[in-house]
Length: 236
Image 1: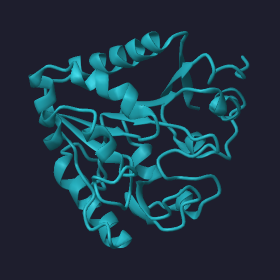
Image 2: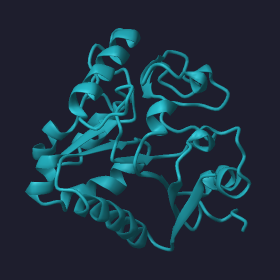
Image 3: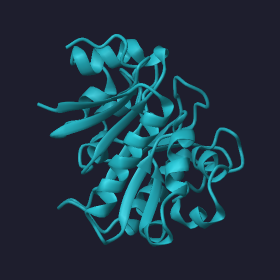
Image 4: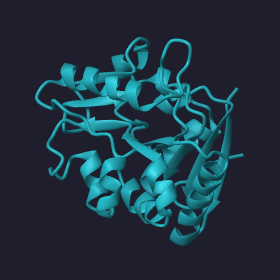
């Protein structure tokens, strides 16, 4: 059974420091390149100041991938990678893998899957990439990445990157990583803030409700970085 390791913070500064310490510890354990997947939502405002503090040596050895991407141009406000690049120095531009062929969801997904294969030397026997770190967010409806409750993509077990053209949350056209990739990551961390997430955090972390996509991630432990509002309905 997955252990939910909760990191509770009382202030924005404490929240940011806990996430920074988590990432720094992981980076210190390896000298080779690191592969990190990042979520959108409000996460760029949390992660970008942390990434800015990395020295050039660490910047040069990280590779950043979006866990999902809206199929819009990188300069569109809805684009996930674009949201990070707007807040980061230009030296990070080469760190990000970007989704191409946005006019065709199937081609965008298959091409990005090839990028994952080429850019990640750590794979399992089936060739599926094993990411060093996943920074995930959580929607009030319980979705993470572009994996939504009760959506057919939750049953996808062959594709590592899947197209979605009926996202319940606009824009409808996206690509997303799938559960097989989530279930291989070495470190999984949810970064969740705000009262609107409190109920679903309770359902997943306290009640172990298996109907939400994060509950389908089967790792030894999952880290939950929560502010007071997001944790307000948790029970022991």
